[in-house]
Length: 378
Image (cartoon, rainbow, N blue to C red; front, side, top):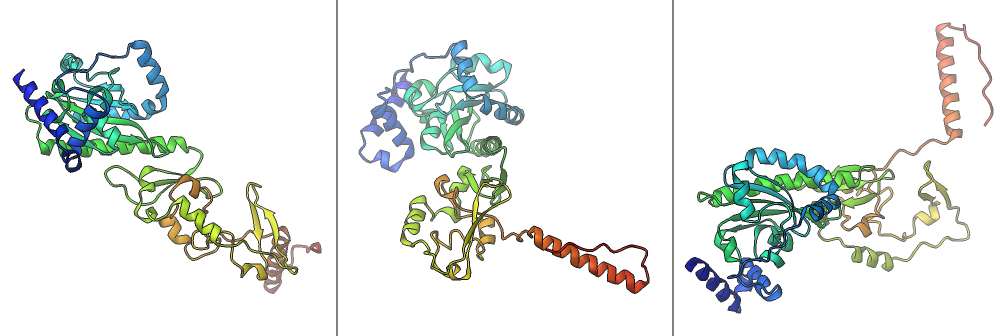
């Protein structure tokens, strides 16, 4: 009881400090728990565990997430879950959906409310590894007395957010333990394993969201997060993972800058002698405008450095595209300069030339066993 009162006094002194929240992210989370959510560190949370029906509904709403995350949880549990340690998966609202723990620790983690159906958001539990990592959108480790509520100081929580195909948080992975020998080195190892597992789930969710597209990996993954973009059949980028949105090559590009650049350039005006024409591709999805020499020298209605149909930056776009948001990348073509297809007339002329060359070679060798059929005029 004395330890709980001492812990509550430390929390209240940090909340009363005018500079603590600015100097420490932990103190900022304590202030959010007390001032925004109205929690008291000396009082425990209200019991609000979901029953079987509501838990089944929550799992059904996250069916795709569970489908891809369960194999990752099983693989990670074989190396993480030991006596006094559990592995948890939550949704975007910090509601525990799945858990992996030993049979001997099930009763202990049930008393600690670290089981499926419990909500560990900052609004309900104060500062903790699950809710705080979701709020701050980054990996967080909350060790024992760093928790806001005195009733949670017996466990240490390490949480990592999981992002969906649109870059938003859809889930979180957490490892909680009450082991006395849990130190900072163990925390670093567990956090690295959690980040790799979260990256695996993110890649599976991204591939599932864009199953009919081609996935392009921009660079090597960092801490389990891979910078990926989804390219459709017309080689247009229609999706980007969170790591791709924060890519170093994409940091200076935004949709507002692209719109401003388009407004600053006047569209091309066709003169009286213009011979431009508009055709469609084989699929008929996108119109392609073929310009004459006169109009090709005039400025385009889009920035040439961002979208160059035959520019030199095409290779750079494949290695590190400059598209960032979905609003912008939907109009940016990342296709390499492709060899133009031959028209039917050109194909017929090519076949005629090859036939004549082959006949001339056979005649030179004295092979006249075949008969020549006249070629149609084009």
